[in-house]
Length: 260
Image (cartoon, rainbow, N blue to C red):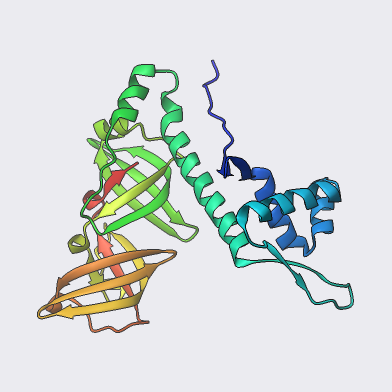
C-alpha cells in the first residue's frame, strides 16, 4: 500500500488581502531572470495584463515599488527588482524550507495517529551546544550495537555519527531526511594539517573567520563549507593561526548528537 503524503500551499496576507504566494514569487523571480515584466509573463504563460495587475496589487499592499526601470540599450530598457522584492523572495523561500522540514519530519508517521501525536507533543528544545550542523542523511549502516549515520553537509563535506539502533528507531530516521549534527565546541580538536588527525575521526577543513583569546583559553570560529563551526580549548592545544588561515578539526563520530 502506498504511503500517505502531505501537500499544502501557503500565502502571505496583508491588510486582510492576499499579498503573495508561490505564483507571485515566481513572477518576481521571472522578472529577475528575464529583465522585463513582458518577458517574465510570456515565460510563465501569463497575459501581460494579469502579470501587470499582480505587480500593481503587490506594490499597493507593500507600500513601495518592487521593480525599477533599467536604462535602455541595444535591446531597449527593462526592469530590475528592488531590495524589498528580493526580501519577499528570500522570506517566502525560507518559509517554504521550514514547511518542507516540518512535513519531512511528520510524513513517516501519517499511518500511525498515536505516534504522530507523540511527535507533535514533543517540546522544541534549545541546546547549549555551539555547533549545530545541518545535513541530509545519506546512509544508515547498522554495526554490532550502534548504527553509523552518514550525513552530507554540502557537495564536498561528509560527516559520520555513531548512535544506538534504538535511537534510530525512536527518532524515526530515514535516508534523505534533513537532520542536525550537534557537537560541543570543546569536543573538537584543532590541527594545522589533516595528517595529524585521528584516522577514525571526522575531519573537516575550515577557514578561520574569527579568533578570541581570553587568558589561557582560545575560541575560534571556522567557516566549513557553507556552515560555521566554533572550537574552544586551552591555548597550548591550539596551533598558531590567524584570520584567513586554513585549519582542520577532528572529532569522534561517537561525540555527535543527532537532532531532527
